[in-house]
Length: 253
Image 1 (cartoon, rainbow, N blue to C red):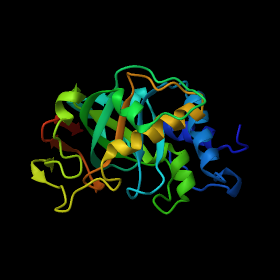
Image 2: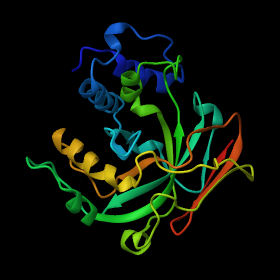
Image 3: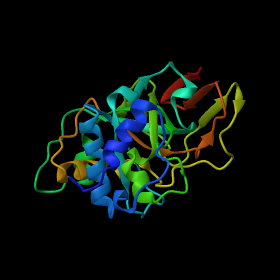
Image 4: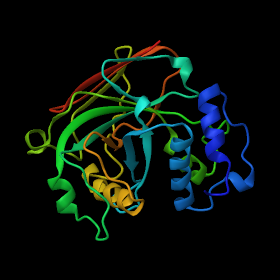
């Protein structure tokens, strides 16, 4: 336990669809390990199970961060979700991965090669960025990290074989399409802030290992936006595609 009531507040915010107006100083995580502990307290308090993870970094040499995503918030494309079920709706187009087999916790860190050798699938992912914190985005970053790193939902295309798709694939500048009601919304300058998103995967595996978690092959691992975050103001249809991987569709009703 962290000594914070933030986990309980986050669960109630989701259940009642009522944002948290203010945070008491004692409820703001003092450091990243505390924020990660609150993520898992929140899942336990909600009787939720992990179905996915979001990970990212602000630059290729920056420290990665991530959050588990409740399995109930992971949707296969085509998906229909109620716009009003979110506090905010911003969309990001990403590449997601799955592993071929479980990676259990161990004392020695997993190497980059071991992690990449375990990859099995690639997919297009659309993250809905949302927050249970009323003052977002003007909120302490550690509180945002505790709040599932601002995740609202994840929509995923069908998985394609990693070995087939990744051969010769341009992970730095893939061809991307992102439209809202048929109009393009992807920025002219595109790219993942972390560079090749696969560099983030060993961080996730070793983060889970340190927390005593087995990385499961059914988890979907989404790895940061190629398009930035685009705010959606009301019901609409979002279509996203990444060349050679696939496409997805989300209808917000």
